[in-house]
Image 1 (cartoon, rainbow, N blue to C red):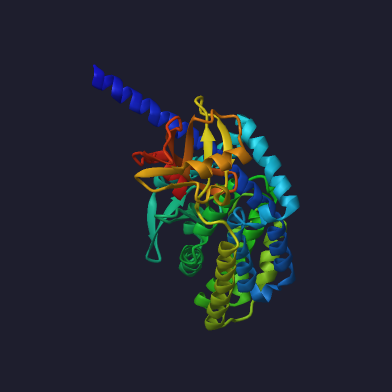
Image 2: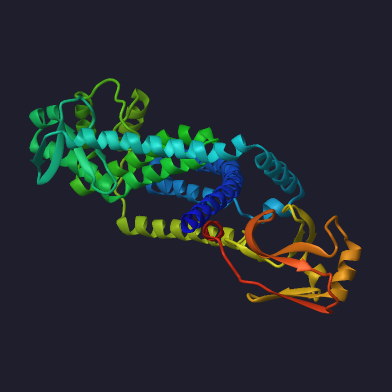
Length: 424
């Protein structure tokens, strides 16, 4: 019976610890992503301006501009947020707001989780519908055949599949089907399905920036333009032949093509189709080596920016060399920074040493409201950001004796959830 009680108490303590850490984690998460969403707006505006400046001839460069959005989730821990007086005031106000309102604290993680789950459900539903379709081999490629009048599309991250309308197989020539399948296979080879999955995740993380959702069509349009160029080059098709193939395929599709966001499919409006045909007409041969070098340069720029952001940001966690005094009820009554406690208190993983004379002098300068002879001290904690941290050890201090140097042995312990929070 005693063992059952002990196990129950351990489980209850484990759950309480998880609740405490999750509460702090939700504040930490919301604070970081609020800043990232704030920065993502001007960053996205810059990308949209660049893609309008860059002509259709440089489609590769236009697509690479979207890689700048990879920087947006890394702006949350910049030291700038605490070194700038205005930003420090804004951060403090937001931290107080999140800390005192449970609903606001869990709102951001809840909405993000909801958007991710919705995408997964839609992807799973589409996968089940495609798995139920009959399969045929066309040009050496196994495709799923749908009776619906939709544009051919590819879907799936781990096991990509190509879906072709039944009408295409019945009416198009082998060469036309081969070119259509090549187009979808190039989408898969270039990683466009993964790009859209990452974009959906970015929209879920930074959902207050509604312009991200509005820009999904522009990203899809640029990726489609890139795929058209690569397909025309690989298939050695002229602008006339490829444009004719695109127009012919549109004849078999429905007027409204509403598909899952995890698919990469054709245009949904007349204006998009018109722009696509105009880009095809303006096609000029390109050199793969030059495109590869351009990709390396863009990757170097983004990678260098990430390194600079990392250097200008707080690390994953920092040891907190300060201590705090705690009363019998667990309330923090005093806080002493590293400079103040130098030589007065020291510790390792086996003992805490309090030098009485120096401690008394320290307490006289900042007495607080704790019992001067019997209290607890907390130390060896860490911080994720200024004002947000966790962990630490706690020992009971009894100064009723006359020791000049009070040595308090203790057993260093760590908490599972706290360590998880430390390394997130």
